[in-house]
Length: 259
Image (cartoon, rainbow, N blue to C red; front, side, top):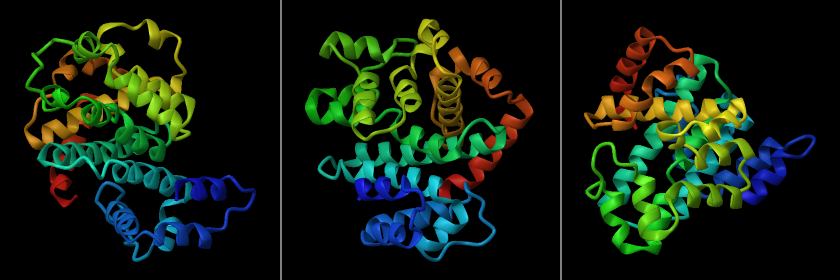
């Protein structure tokens, strides 16, 4: 589906009817597209009743990015359980909050921000499938506040979820800036060397991802230790005041249960 979709979207004159057919041919995917498109995070005045309407209302680029992220979840259908359900729920919510932040701050493309939110930690379910004992990192029980998760992963497995996630993103033909942001999304917490050489778009994505995670944690009562370390940096990069951030937190809190 993704190959056909990308081929059609890159044509000189994309055929929206065919694109709608590609997506609509998978009932679960089409239903997920409509559910997300009609969520409060997109704020559509007219609700989409079909994939074709979602294409018209959201635009081809946004729907393509949305489908890419939804297909990512389908790729992990063999990995079930309460832990995975919590992961996908948090991942989807964070991706939609990232898109909302992008629109509210006029920082980049909201569709790309949505995809980044879904792929940012996608290396974690990959590592869980490869290494069953990774479960204590996946559920957070092996982590202590202030201890870098990448260090624990590197010590155990000589690789980490950021590196694995970036490799997966490249195999899905995501943009270089997206892959870079996935690879370095923890670096702002402990080292700024990589970010100093990064494209502005990639740095903004990392900031959006961190802010989106904090907004999700505020809405659900969870903790986001990394916000204490780099929250001020993220707000600066997004030119986002504390008052506006607090207002967004209230909007997210009111909408989170509708996902």
